[in-house]
Image 1 (cartoon, rainbow, N blue to C red):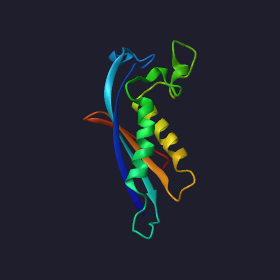
Image 2 (cartoon, rainbow, N blue to C red):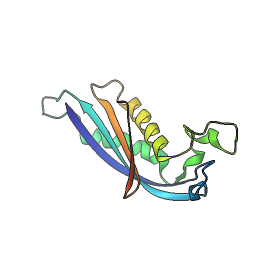
Image 3 (cartoon, one colour):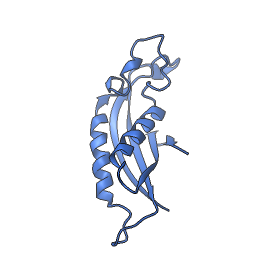
Image 4 (cartoon, helix red, strand yellow):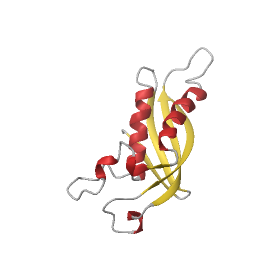
Length: 134
């Protein structure tokens, strides 16, 4: 099995709705993103997939996050100012950002012999989350 990693990053702001600590306030991060794809096949050149193709898809997605207030992005909108909504999956946490990136990247490679294996998000140099389907 071949595992291909591509990284990117984006700066953005968010707040965590209904969070009891300081992260309930507006603040920002420079998130680092690693996407890992896997396949058992390589082409006649010996490549599983051109890194440039993966970077192109990832950078296109990163542009949707870049310098944004993440709470306003479509994936997270429903958590605004509502006490009766389950914010577990809509709050723009690193966990949910990783899941969204995983799902969106999966759409880019749905017709390939390659799948998204995992997405890792760092919100700081010392803290990261990995989302996968294992």
